[in-house]
Length: 339
Image 1 (cartoon, rainbow, N blue to C red):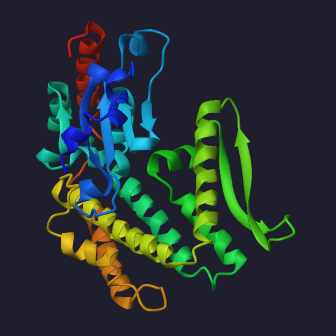
Image 2: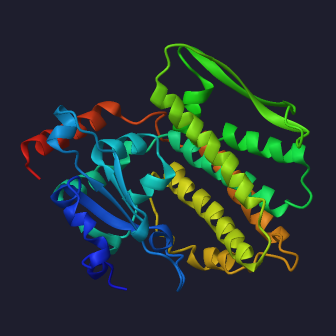
Image 3: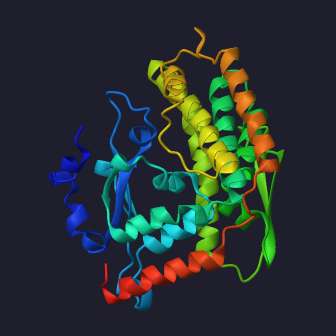
């Protein structure tokens, strides 16, 4: 497929006409299965990108964080927003810096600078972002497979554990506060149809409303996703379960590259066959659960992850000074229109 020609079609004209995009775009690349090399004939084409903040965003009163076009599965992040996400080694955005050269559909000189500086964003935060995300995916997987045997109490515990292992940047905000705290736990249910349920003890003062809104939204999404998974009951769902298992292993592969090699490798060329075998159901039993071979494979990656997080040479945090210098340089050019 000629992806660059695809961008010239009518469906993608918003990339040129949106006032926050157009000539402000510095990077466009493939996302999803095509980015990982695990696409199949029916895979959707996902596009991910970065656009500079405008002068009015930076020193005026307008605001731009990202543009999402659901019809084309396209997301373009504002430069300042992507920097924030990259500093926390956000799995869904750090992968944009690890594509194969031919998977970048557009790359401006400033976009190339971003790629050249990608190592600035690598730190031990990947332990929490990738590890927490993988843990979340694993618990969702376990819940989906065991949907017929889990009690309501066990299910609620799964949800709580997932929330407690959410991505690092969100986790830091709801576990530790300068002016209070939010404590999550299970107890005897108040709702009649439940035995136990999750409760919150909230003690906050002078806390930003928008931050709290973000925290609440993340927790709500977890509860909503578990409700969807619980309704899995056909062959289509087995297809998604295999895909889910594949992405869980892929997460560990990518995280290990970061911790062990200090590299971002989104396209999984060497592990392609293994990942596709998982996706195609070769690790699923006739009963719709995963074979022991899958759990053994997962266990191997978990052990490697535990070792890598204790022995990685990455710094605890990114080099904020160098990142700031880069951001100032880019935003000064954005304000002057030099891009």
